[in-house]
Each structure stands twice: as C-alpha cells, then as structure tokens.
Image 1 (cartoon, rainbow, N blue to C red):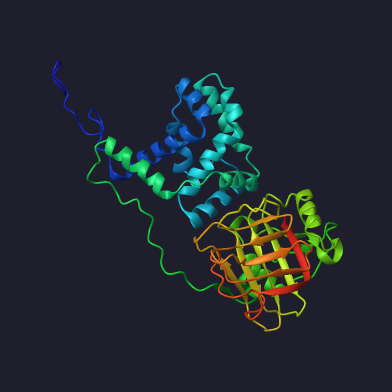
Image 2: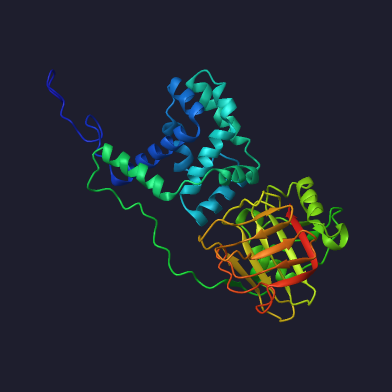
Amino acid sequence: HATPGAAPRARSGVLAPPKPTPRAAFERSALAAFAELAAQRCRRCSAHLAALGVRTDELCAPWFRRLFVGVLPYPTVVRVFDSFLLEGAKVLFRVGIALLQRHKAALLACTSAEHVRVALRVRLQGEGDACALMAAAFRLPSFTLHSIHKLQRRELRLHGSAGRVPRLEPVPQRERPPPALLHTGASSSFFIPRLVDSQRELLATLDLDVRQQLWAALPTAERGRDGVLVYCNLTHGSSLRTLYALCEAAGVSTRGAIVVARALDGRGVFGGYTSHGVRQSAGQPYGSGESFLFAASERVVGAGVRTYGWTRQNDLFAHGDATYWAMGGGRTGSFGLSVDDDVCGGSSAPCETFGLDASLHDASAERFRYAVLEVWALQ
C-alpha cells in the first residue's frame, strides 16, 4: 500500500501517459491530415464543428479505424472497401470528405456536440446509394498521396517524431502484369446472372460462359446483380442522344453499367464496365479504377474473357459529349473504346488508361462499324 501523503509513483498506463507507439503516431498523423483536408474543402462545416467544440479528427476516427463498418450500410461498405483495395487509403479520405459535404446542411443546423454526433450517425446509416456516394467522392478535385503524406509528416514532427518518420511513400508498383484471362470453366462462379429487358423477359445476348466470366471481373458489390437492358441500337435506334437519354431515365448515368458490342464482321464480343454509368460529361473524365475493358471470342471454346484493368497511368476512365462517348485514352489521343454520335461506328485502339496494346476488336483495324451496341444496368 502507498504511504499516506507520499507522492504516487508514475506508472506507465496509469499515472504517466503511455509512450506513443509508431502505430498510434501514424494513426494520429493520418487523422490530423484528414482534419486539415476537411478544413480546406469543407470550411464552413469545419468552422461550425470547431465552434461547437467538436474536433473533426475525433468525430471521424471511427470511420477509418473500422473502414466504415457499422457506420455506413453494409452494401455501401462493400463498395468503399472494394475501391480501397484497388486504389489505397486515399479512397477513405475521398469518401470521408464526400460524406461531410453531402451532409453539410444537417451539420450546420446542429446546435451542440451531441446533436452533431446523433445527426451524423442517423444520416450516415441512410447512405444506401453507394453509387451516388462514390460518384461524389471521385468528383472531388484530385488530392494526391504525396500531399496527404506531407501533412502526415508535418504532424509527426510537431509531436516529436522527427527523425523516425515512417516511410509513407506508396509502395513502388511492379511491372504491370499482362491482361487477366478469366478462364476457369463453367464452375468459375456459383452465380449465373440473368440478362433481361425492361419487362424482365430473358435475353441471350451473351452465352453462359462469357456471362459468368465477365461477371466474375465485376466489383464485388455488383457480382450478385442481374443485367437489365437499357439501350440497344437495334431496338431504340442509332442515336447517341437517345442512348444518353435512356441511360439517364434508367439511372445508369450515375451507377455501374456494362457496354456490350459486336462488330459487323462478327469477331466476338467486346466492351467495358463503367463504374459511373454512361453520360455526357462535356469531355471531362469521370468514373473510378473499378472500370475495365474486355474482349471475348465466342467462336473458340474455352477462349475466356480477357479483361484490361486500370494501370494508374491516368484517370480517363470514361468521358463523352454530344459527338462521342469513350472509355480510356492517353497521350496518343486514341480511345480504348469509343462510340460515334450516330452509334453506327466506333473505334478501339491502344490506350494508357487500361493498358490496352491492341484493338479490342481486331489488331489490324482500329475503326469498325457496330452490328450491335447495348448498355446493361446492374440491378
């Protein structure tokens, strides 16, 4: 027992503050970096929270510690986690900033710290539209890993960690592997997606093997959905304006969709998955690294579906205006896949976005005419 009146001895974790571990210091620096970014991009909201005595880093810490599990609805968490595995920690920062911006009005209406926590908890549980959230997150002006790491280093040095700042540089990328060939036979997926029209009548646009292998390449949150036909040039006419209008009416302008094409010479099927739909964007790029291009030969049994994923060379995932719609691009000015304004012709050429080294349709011909062009929503 301690002697009465004697000064208690400092013990680690009891009276003396515990020595921060590298992991704790790194977590603290990451939260401080997020708070700084929030102050830059959500100024009114951050200032209001500060006036109520709410620290942004403490308010949002559970989001990052739990990767939004229990914070957002489960399907939305799956979508965020899928992007996190693909693109890294900056996705969490993007989603966090997007959440603050989407619920700015509710936060500004709060009058106390407890009111803030309750209101935000309720609002985040209602974030059931994962596509809308991810679209808002990826519409944010780019902030690089370098800028985030710079903020983290500054925070670490402010708290006496100079000289032992952990390496925050992104892991060097290995040489890009060849395009993935999804071929594991008929048992590659237990889920067999249906392809239906707007009246839920079954269609047979893709054969079973191609369908299963293509769905296996989709983001995890999309693999259990069926394909619903939104546009077909043979049914709705050859007009890019009509294509845009039908996609907007069906809500495919903001969520994942599959573009499927066949050329007149019938050399297999090809197309792409666009994570944020088909829409006009005034030529500005949109979408995320979940997007990919694909090609499949239905003449060769067991040929498989060849997919071309994001290479991180640029972010030209999808873009279009009244005269064209395309996926991919690069310094050469060519597209991985494009559709002309009359939806009769298009092109496919090597592009940096998806590491495409030859045309999806035919290595010897970048321009071609469409026999069939379809857009499928995932529902």
